[in-house]
Amino acid sequence: MNTSAMNLTGTASWLALVAQGESMRSRTLRELFAEDGERGQRLTCEAVGLYLDYSKNRITSETLRLLIGLADECGLRERIAAMFSGERINITENRAVLHVALRAPRGSSIRVDGKNVVPHVHAVLDRMTGFACRVRGGQWVGHTGQRIRNVVNIGIGGSDLGPVMAYEALRHYSDRGLVFRFISNVDGTDFAEATHDLDPAETVVIVSSKTFTTQETMTNAQTARRWLLAAFGGDERAVAKHFVAVSTNATKVAEFGIDTANMFEFWDWVGGRYSMDSAIGLSTMLAIGPDHFRELLAGFHEMDEHFRSAPFDRNLPVLLALLTVWNTNFLGAETVAVLPYDQYLKRFPAYLQQLTMESNGKRVTLAGRDVDYATSPIYWGEPGTNGQHSFYQLIHQGTRLIPCDFIAFVESLNPLGPHHAMLLANVLAQAEALAFGKTADEVRAEGTAEWLVPHRTFPGNRPSNVLMAQRLSPAVLGKLVALYEHAVFVEGILWNVDSFDQWGVELGKVLAQRILGELQSKAAPAPAHDSSTNELIRRCRQGK
Ligand code: F6P
Image (cartoon, rainbow, N blue to C red; front, side, top):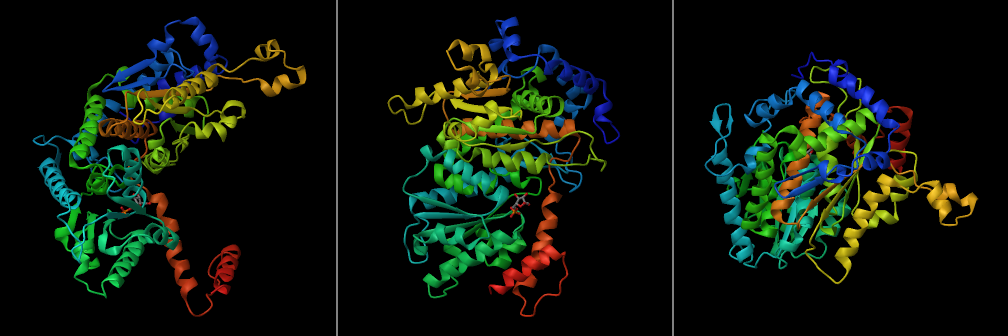
């Protein structure tokens, strides 16, 4: 088991993988495919309606065997069981990590400190359903009796990225009679632009914050309160009709002035970046309706069950994670590009950035020792085909190794003439071009002038995964998100880090608080910082 005492880089599997990495550096995907005519069928995995083709990675069956050996040496099977059984695996915050309970079917049992939490999850889901039905059905009306037509979610990080991503991803399934806006940034522009054309009398504001203390969210919530009350001549009674809260912190919700009857609860065993399927998904439920929301949860759950039970060599999250570890730690990749070929998934890369990097962007082990290996790669991406006309140049011909996760759907939700065939042709072509490139001889054979040959040559050997599903649906989105959630978990186990805390965001928050006081103070601040920060503060104050 990968206990705090374990030295990852000294394990037999790690050492064998280092040697394997050395030998694979000189192998090409062209050779590997030429040696095995079945590779494109063999190095694939299909489960719960998702198909993963990982054959275009620079691996052999031996690589995979060694990676699985590493997972075994790290005690992955036991760690999965520990998470599902509610152990406090988030050790720095002394919390259980049970987002899987959020999608557990009614009647099942998952215990935290001896108590089954599943009935609580479903009680909140039922309350969310009641609220969503009343808003969508027009029975929940505003202070002046007007029907609610606008939903504004105020939140940041996990209380924003999941809801925005899901709203965009499932727009096809959404009630087009409702307008959805998401406000996250403390920059007043975000609030101003999101609300400038909304009528407060027709707007419900969801204040989403696990802690209900986050500076950005509380500032935006106060601004929303003023915006709303201004429309009702300051009548405080309007708050009850126009504000609801999603939080773990009932005391702070009440202090803000929102009746806790209008609060949808979740729990400290749900991490912010793992919360889009908790009450934080209230805006999602309002958009797509309770039935579709439950389909989303069922999709999550299907992936949970697959993750928990499938052997590692047929386990989608485990394979995805092992490939990331391989590319990062043994081939030296520093990033992963996530490239959804579906416009609805345009915010999926941004969502994954928090999930992956806030989870595994860590530099010490569970025991607090410095790691001597790389942890989370940098995640980024844009939907295809747009990225092809922007940064793909660097992926094809630049000096860096950038593994790509392509995501595609066999069927389009908007089948318009030739569009979808073109979209699919492009994603398949990109994976092919990255893997196999174009040699100098092939370029020459096209009659290219010799001086241009190096410019037109593609080295290839760039790894990628292709993830496919039949069509984008709420259930498929749930599966996709759970796939990455669990892959992040597996990576964290191998890297022996706490994937569920985020201490790295704290220092900036504290310093910002101090600088805010200095910017707002009447007196010139004493130069309490370094000369650079002092000068920048001075310049900001001059403009006041
Ligand atoms: O940025 C740190 C963080 O705590 C995230 O982990 C979290 O998702 C976000 O802030 C928002 O927190 P809250 O939901 O408590 O407002």
